[in-house]
Image (cartoon, rainbow, N blue to C red; front, top):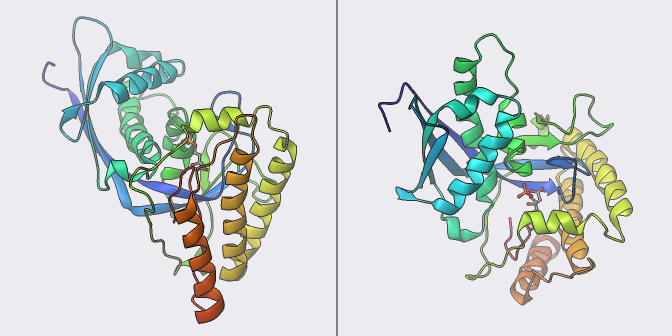
Length: 298
Ligand code: PMV
């Protein structure tokens, strides 16, 4: 690569959904609104170097110092998608260096933080090559790479998807969710299985296209956003916890009841669910669980 004429660095946290995004429509738009919390200790840090060469678009991507061709292919597709909005993006060569502050084998959704950090870099570059234009927000740009990445910008609580509960909400980008009365809310990540099984999120979203409970799921998600909003407003942690747990179980119930069923929770997952509930009941400790599309807990 010739000497870069532009370089930028950005970081972004991963996030865990309290109200789950499960199912897509159009291109990377959610079938229901979702609400998440940033995982501030799980960050992706990305550097983007841009140079001008004689030949066409080219990129190379290094994850933790090593060339990562699999992720490179995905990012290449991402640039092609972005070029539908900003064609000049394909006039350059890019070198991307990225690393996570958390173990990537741990099963924590790293595509959210990865695309959010990259989108933040690209947004800065777009301002340089399109100085006269209003550039889409980093959340909009991140969404085109991975849906949940739209919620890994700003934080600590983000809402994505149109809901009548929030006037500014939309399917194209996430917005900050007011959480003044929940400032003390903290997360702990528990890995219950070394060999974390995860369903690829695109497979999962596809399962929703013809899911027998699709309509009911959409209705529930809207209702749960309403409940969560009220809980946030009043600082009602038990109410919020209740809805978060219900959402986690519903996500897995949807997987269990899809045309091709997926069983991603295991006996360890169940043991932790019982343990969390026991701590609340017997010791009055206010902890609640949520699950991603695997056996892991937050
Ligand atoms: O952003 P994706 O396509 O990786 O989908 C994320 C899906 C869940 O993690 C299961 C739920 C969510 O809202 O983050």
